[in-house]
Image (cartoon, rainbow, N blue to C red; front, side, top):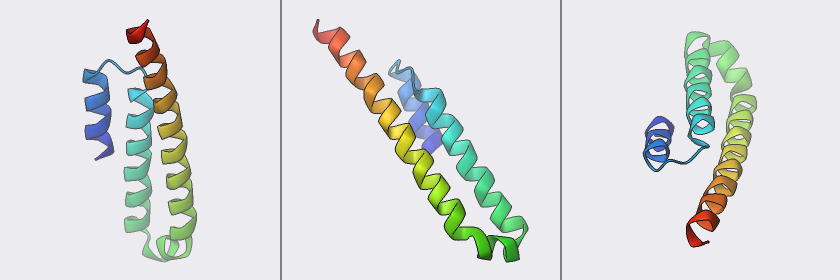
Length: 76
């Protein structure tokens, strides 16, 4: 879903699409880490979830500022 969202942002010419793509790839890597080592995954699922949610929040803030900047350029 994150990769698709980054492609949509790229087509809309939003500069922050690379950050969204990096966040999606990190989420996939965290998922594979938990699958490959179930014991470690069971012990650290809360940590990985917190890091992923934090990354998503930071990404959404960055994209929001870029969209606001883009909107101001279009209005002016």
